[in-house]
Amino acid sequence: MNEITSSETRDIILDVAEKLIYKSGIAATGMDLLVKTAGVSRKSIYRYFANKDDLIVAALKRRDERWMHWFSSEVDKAPTPAARLLNLFTVLKGWFDSEGFRGCAFINTSGETGDPEDPVRQLAKLHKQKLLDYVTRLCVDQGVENPDALARQLLILIDGAITVALVMGDHGAADQARDMLGSLLKLDESNA
Figure 1: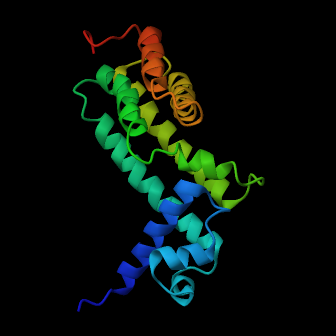
Figure 2 (figure 1 turned 180 degrees about the vertical axis):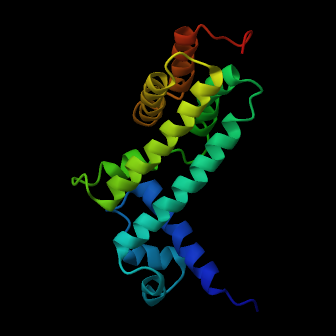
């Protein structure tokens, strides 16, 4: 019989916490549910995390790292700077169409906290800043006149498309955002 190592137990707890938080939110993810779903004792959870808040922040940090890596890797597969900008929304569309899509974990969890200084809100802000920095780099690579301004507009298009896809069930929001970007930059598939 294989014994589970300490780091594997911690990873299991984080994986389960992330999935439950993404599916149902912070408030609905109680310690009893975490214990039951992860198949670990409450003592095991507290061995790695001082409290539920620490566990939530750790799970969201992992999601941030994993999501940003996935997203940038997929977007960067496009062959040219212009194509990568358009690919932002193609990749989002694929995510929207995936099983279990529940919107942006950082927008969702931020909505559960009222305090702008709450660690969850601060982590969400950091996630959005990383996304903004990445999109700014894409704009610089494309050689747009004002990459910072365009990147901020694209962040709004990205988060707007995510929100519309979740709330309205309209996965075509990614296509509409992509069309808006194409019009803004006079880009299409033929010159990207």
